[in-house]
Length: 140
Ligand SMILES: CC(C)(COP(=O)(O)OP(=O)(O)OC[C@H]1O[C@@H](n2cnc3c(N)ncnc32)[C@H](O)[C@@H]1OP(=O)(O)O)[C@@H](O)C(=O)NCCC(=O)NCCS
Image (cartoon, rainbow, N blue to C red; front, side, top):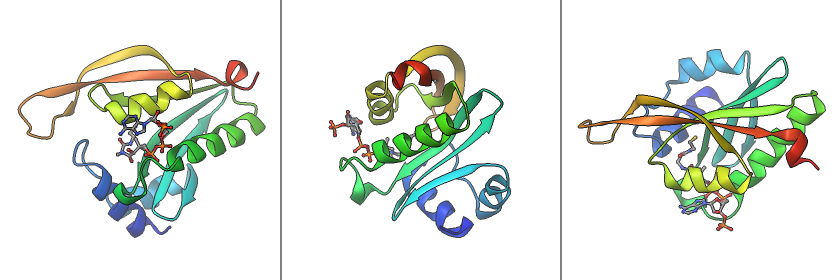
């Protein structure tokens, strides 16, 4: 996908936090790893022993078909090949579909950032949960 296509899909999937622009994707693609399918992508990065999932988006029409699970598995595989031991990410605490997905991969909660995301109606801020998945345990 091009930076423009990534940004368009990100807009479809995220009202809050703020959707990312094509330029932001262009810059991120220089240092990140992209896993993609038609109408879905995961953008992550590897930092020494750790990997981070920066964003994950599946077009509304393609949801609940196992697409995000496939993307996460592919990212885990690449991370394992690179000798990575842990994958972390931030997720809004009210994002129940994403929390259910990460729970199915045995991510655990290791932190909380208060008022990290603005809510859709802008009236209250939502905390981010910091989740972590130990690849050594997951791959056993
Ligand atoms: C979260 C998101 C990526 C899930 O994508 P998906 O392709 O629908 O996920 P999958 O089909 O692989 O679902 C895997 C499991 O996650 C859980 N899950 C996913 N969506 C769910 C939902 N809406 N409600 C409850 N559980 C859900 C289920 O356990 C599901 O397994 P099941 O379908 O066998 O019950 C997608 O809803 C999305 O793009 N949302 C908007 C962007 C977003 O929130 N990204 C993550 C931010 S960190």
